[in-house]
Amino acid sequence: QSALTQPPSASGSPGQSVTISCTGTSSDVGGYNYVSWYQHHPGKAPKLMIYEVSQRPSGVPDRFSGSKSGNTASLTVSGLQAEDEADYYCTSYAGSNNVVVFGGGTKVTVL
Amino acid sequence: QVQSVQSGAEVKKPGASVKLSCKASGYTLSGYAMHWVRQAPGQRLEWMGWINANSGNTRYSQKFQGRLTITRDTSASTVYMELSSLSSEDTAVYYCARDPYGYKWYFDLWGRGTPVTVSS
Image (cartoon, rainbow over all chains, first blue to last red):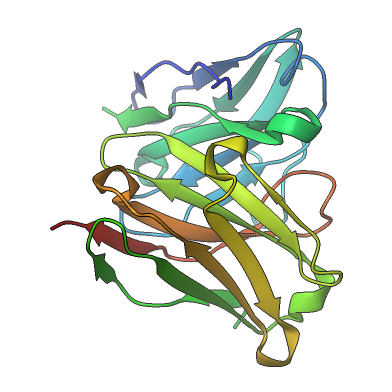
């Protein structure tokens, strides 16, 4: 079961933007528009931030946006706020055998 | 309040089995699929398998084939995850994650997780 590649860390000052990449293969990220992103504060339940590459659930600020190009998906957080400091994970559907794969997570720090 | 309520922490010996529960509160379980995801200390989230709570159909990650069983009791609004032949590598926090469609592969509601420790 292949995993998706994320940078281990990213940071920005309040008000700045940060973009997190999520690189897979043509068998997962590149092959399906089923990429989603989750915010995880330790000790709490993960929270859905983006689904189907770029769709934002109700209640998620429009500061969060998603995109995809080829085998790489991206999550951008604009106008960073202190509460955005968390771990962020990407996932992708990977076909009927592998089903779902996760990225390794990116720790976002608000400086 | 819409939430998935998971059972409490477990401590098991190697070779034993563990059965965790995830109760739907504020929503109808049969309208969703439910996945199980775990996170070992210092490791990434790892998908384990899922169940269509309406039909009872299941699909497991190849990694857990043969020792993972996911079931549901719609009358109790609860999904269960049983993992057998435990080893120290199964020490992790186990999450249930609700899938609103069962074919769009995203999780719109997560439980808070159940810590499982496997130690002799």
